[in-house]
Amino acid sequence: MVLDIFLGILQIVLFPGIVFCIGLTFLLEWIDRKYYADLQNRMGPLYVGWRGILQPFADFIKLMAKEDITPKAADRKMFTATPLFSVVVPLLALLFIPIANITGVLSFQGDLIFILFLTTIVAILIILAGYSSMNRYSSIGAARAGLQLMGYEIPLTLAALTPAMIARSLTITEIVQYQAVAGMSILLFPSMIAFGVFIITLLPELEKIPMDIPEAETELVAGWQTEFSGKKYAFFRLSNNLELLLGAGLAVTLFLGGPYGIEKLPGLTALDLVIQGNIVLSTVWYTVWFLIKTAIVVLVITNLRALFSRYRIDQMVRGAWRYLTPLMIGVTAITMLLSAVAPGLYPVV
Image (tube, rainbow, N blue to C red; front, side, top):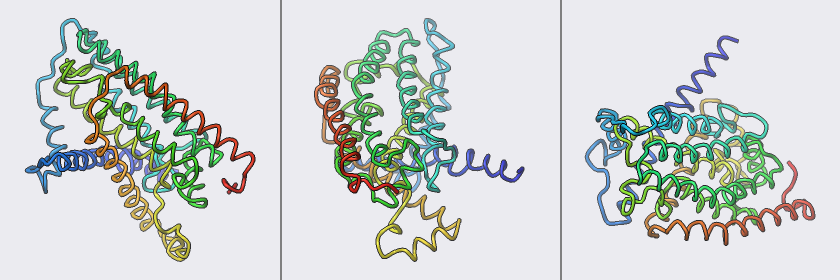
């Protein structure tokens, strides 16, 4: 009993929990910045570590060492609390993502709904952070964040629920296990449409170009982040990286088979048996495949950042309500209909 508790704590704190996820966020930020720079014919991170791989970590340490200023008119308690909670909430959600195993560190029935709830909490924290600053630019940025939330939340949720309906489960572990038997959800119609919508709606969730409207530097200085500095700004930067890992990891889990690799392909049964029979090998195997798939999703997001310029807030909300939401309602209806009338298409496993 004591050993199980100790191992559980190690999983939460070290691997594949808090420390591993934070380290992985710095790696994904480096991949994002390096590839984004390459698309724009720039160098990107270069000097700190091999090809600048340690630059994101160095930036975090530098921000932690800078002066931390709280405006006199700000709501001091909320102004201080929102950066802390913005890190804790995505870290909690990441504990449910299967990284080194087919199940996350934490798991319970219906945990997919809980993760989607936590992603909404992160957006609400951004709104509270902007309003607590008592700054005009920050208030406008917070209002834009709220409008974005009203636009992308419904199609994002419906897109995430599409593979859940195919697997007939709202539990992440069961969705991953279903894909191990029936194949990756992205290969099943109309789940590939849901994957595209999921990636598009991740952009406003992560406030990435072209959906970085709440912090548009050309209009609002830094939007809702204008008054944050030092440790608080470092926490928000870390939170954004954690959200990137969470969003990409959720896409991998729901649509790309989670941590499963090529061992589930026909003819590789012997390899699958060897991996399942060795806990160390399976941990390394699943982690490597999760990292590869997550990096691919991050590169897709980076491509979208480089291809498009920033939308106006009315364009973003109009597009979400006029196109994405009806599209996902139709996809959801088709998925439910196919599950009922063509059970062979989505077999029960």
